[in-house]
Image 1 (cartoon, helix red, strand yellow):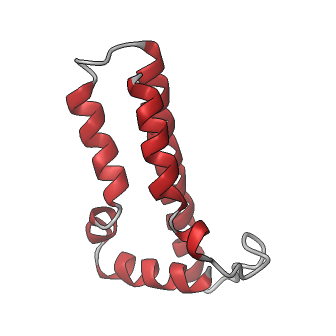
Image 2 (cartoon, helix red, strand yellow):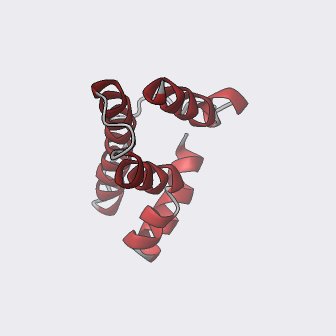
Length: 107
């Protein structure tokens, strides 16, 4: 887990806009909200698409919070007590869960 944070932190230190640019699922979710809300205005679609946006927003906010802690030379053990070995399924979990939630939102 710390390796993933280190890679994200290097992007964040270069430019925060570059960090947001590399969060493609967040940008794609914003694109879907702006373009598909007029076609799918049901409450189910709005709930699921906003759920996706909320999860991605909380993910980005938490990572930026951790980056601020790194900038202040604080330890991350309080927030991430175990260095989790991220396997294939955990790394690409968003590839499966976000399209599933989007399909549920459309139908």
